[in-house]
Length: 190
Image: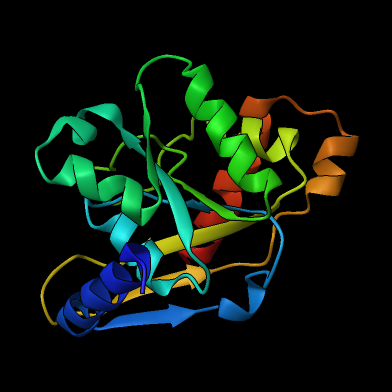
């Protein structure tokens, strides 16, 4: 058993009963091929919650500072996280993300780039649109709904893939593409 599978099982056994996690829409998640998984961001626990509810292993970008934290910095690569420099265009992280998608794996992103303080969905950064336009990956929107309060239900909703063929035909830029992805996430929160 690899570290990812072990960590997923351990984290799931703790978080699922604690937050009474309900998962909806797994039938929308492609069984194979590259997937760009885009979710809203309301809490530090969002990456593990998406990781334990997604039906396939998910690789996440994580702020590079986390890789300098003792112990955590050693664990993160084993659970498919890779560093990104925040606040600038990190070419190495962009290349790594495209490679993950090209190899037919799942890249998880929180397009807002930071947690929402209010729980309301915010404006997404152009990175999600960049990956969506530069790859042939299916773009799956995901909404995390509810407060992270023990024993209160937390809902994770996976929606149908965003129709990227139409978006690519319109020749939209990365920012506008991200806006459309964010609209799809917002529609799952209703």
